[in-house]
Image (cartoon, rainbow, N blue to C red; front, side, top):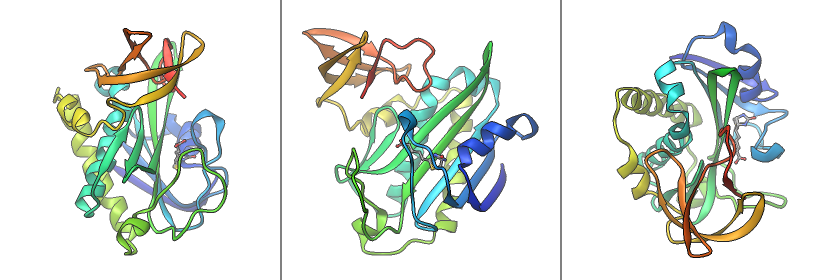
Length: 242
Ligand code: BTN
């Protein structure tokens, strides 16, 4: 794995998007500060300098690209492992790609794909709240940091190396055919919860039933089960969680 670190960058995801053709599979880019950090749905992702673990990982391996629907869950699961290894409890994956700790958002993941007819590469971007003492401003989902949960500051450089190790191990297991579904289901935050979702362009309240082997989410809508995709990376959106 190639590791590149910037003190300041616009966005680690954007940097990989602009440079992916020249870079090796599994290039890992991190930053202390992003001037134009991006979240999902064109939202901004802001974090004060040196307070969070912000990184992006480039995937070009064709076997993994074929499994792109599982990659965001795998990234979230890898962050869950990192947090559990750091002694944080009650950590869950909020499908398709957020990580929650004690019911609050601790990590957001932005998965982007570059396609030229076929999918050429995937970029997994993650922002994990580490040492923030408080969060200013309005948030759609209430945030929390590792510090707020443990009362201890964490060395972000060490976390960075740990997540590199966890991600490479999990991605190589996935490439070899390991079935992560039981692990994903164990940490499924949405299971049994009512959520608002877009179903065929219409906003509805649905009940999350289970995570499927292909990374989609089975939901109950108007007493009928249907499978929905995340919308971020899917080429064929049947529904998405708002
Ligand atoms: C979200 O919850 O909306 C996803 C947030 C993803 C933020 C990370 S920080 C590192 C990488 N670079 C970006 O510009 N975004 C992702």
